[in-house]
Length: 270
Ligand SMILES: Nc1ncnc2c1ncn2[C@@H]1O[C@H](COP(=O)(O)OP(=O)(O)O)[C@@H](O)[C@H]1O
Ligand SMILES: [Mg+2]
Image (cartoon, helix red, strand yellow):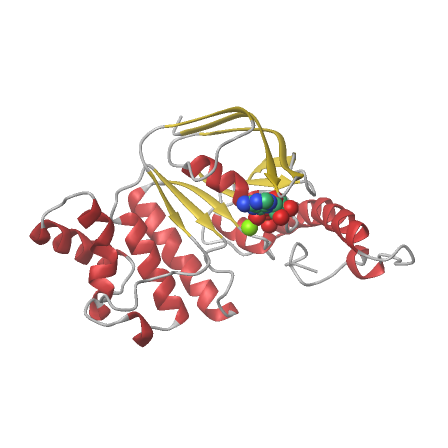
């Protein structure tokens, strides 16, 4: 099991106040599985990735993980003074890999995301989608056992996002990395993953953990997927409404969140 999360809770203590971010979360992720984590904003999705990635310490429970993870964030955060190739090769440089080998490996990671032509470009010359592809290459080049992705396509326009989803699936089909993918879009989760884990409003608890068995490429308009989407959307809407209730004035009716919506991003920040 590359990632095993057992009864994990996380409380942040800051400036004398404490915030319960996660409560009693357990999740076993088999090798090669593509898992999406979905939930209202602030429910602890990023916290869980940070815990799995070893960037934060947990308050209770246990996480075990084999090998090294790599993380891709919403913002690529490339070094502006390095070429794309040198950005991708940087992690290998830190690990003491020789120049020749790291350039070869970085070039092959860039080919994997179809960005080889821009190896010698600088980040400012890339579009947002290309920067995220570079960020994925930078993670892949480390040959991680687990790829942790925190809303990696969240800042992209819809068309670019769809392209990057395809790109990621083709990388995943070739490498069969275990992927933990955070998104607030149910649509994205259903298009991509083998399994969708839905979290409650803060403190995050698992409210649904469902397998998505439809063959890829997927279309969320297909009846079985559409039915699953409706089911998860209702669960998610209820959690999003809890967040809104906690944030809004007492006279708020809640109609905007509970009304059925054709928009799939019901978990988006409101
Ligand atoms: N470093 C931190 N210190 C204090 N509170 C934090 C920290 N990181 C996150 N939180 C709080 O923990 C909760 C969960 O945050 P986060 O994991 O970022 O949620 P999500 O990614 O689901 O939006 C939020 O209430 C957030 O404000
Ligand atoms: Mg987050």
